[in-house]
Length: 217
Figure (cartoon, rainbow, N blue to C red):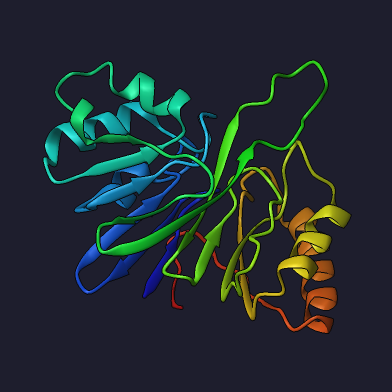
């Protein structure tokens, strides 16, 4: 399949004429990513992972588009009666098909930011037993050999050591960055240098992708 990275946490997957988009958020080129998509997966409710106006516009303009998201997101989208039937609640530990892709869900909880900040639902998605997008968490898929890992390389809820441990734990042959919009070039170089060097010791080849870069996975 073809994987295209957009700014921050958004990726677009294409296979056999089908398009699946994960986390088109307000930091991303959401309208471009959503063009001609048949399905969207949302990991959680934070705006950097879901651009609600852009997603609702896409749902209204594309009658074949369906969305899978945690109930907190799905419930608000279903308030629009025009699109409600095409919005589905995603729960952890479930297998389903979306736009011709097989999807398996993991996790259930956003990583803790601070004790005074409420924890929200977060679903990690494994697509076609290949690409794993964890959303805002370091949940490791159990019983699965992930082939392509999307790594949240920087977030208010993480530190570099946790990013490295996540890569080491999953041990996917290939890894690409997501959740990187808050990094400047100096900070990115430090984080990616550690992930590249240490990840390689455990069999993971980390590759940098800029927004709109595409790669076959």
